[in-house]
Image (tube, rainbow, N blue to C red):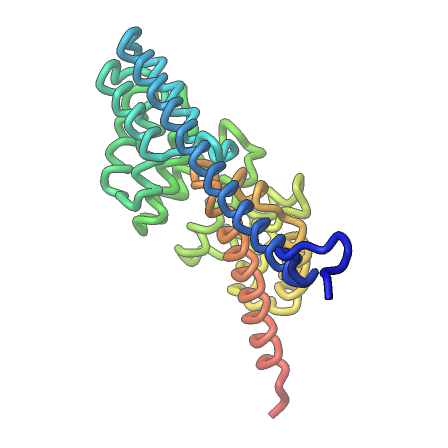
Length: 282
């Protein structure tokens, strides 16, 4: 018998054609993804080459500082590159060590890299040259000292910075953190409450307040505040986390936010256990 009209000796069952089509689509999608990634890499390399050329033709500490700032912006994932940022800040410092904020930025990078000794030396250099004209340096030094376990000096530097920016909730939260570490629970509570007076739904401040109340033995109030913190943290986005932790790689914002959410949940669980234990009747 002859073949059916219009049939081809190369025709496949429809389900096979569907599988082949799907497979080709997946292969094309993978190729497109890696092509896009390569274009991004090439774009970054070309941008770096352009910056290097401009610095060679027009060497300038201010230009290098601006390039470093560009690559140290956590809200700009496409340009963020902490290695490049450090290179440009070091270039600026070598060209003109008196340029404002260059040692401030180098200290922030050293801190993020875990080199606290270098970070402290760099921020001390910043403060010795510019003092109160650039008060954010005191915030950075307070952060470094806190992680070094020097809670007294850390709290002092935070308090000094807050004289210039009294409504900076992040500084208040960080000051409260070192006060909590130092066992100054009542003072930490006062600092947190002063911040919550103008940002009452701030998840970080609420979590710190819950911790202070817990340490003071007020478990019932601590639980209520911890529940408010849990609600507040549920609305946060990775972008919010990046804004709260400037300088950190935006690529880790998702896991940073997840870690904060887990910390809030753990805090509430600890308070719930303490409250349950305290109400057990013997």
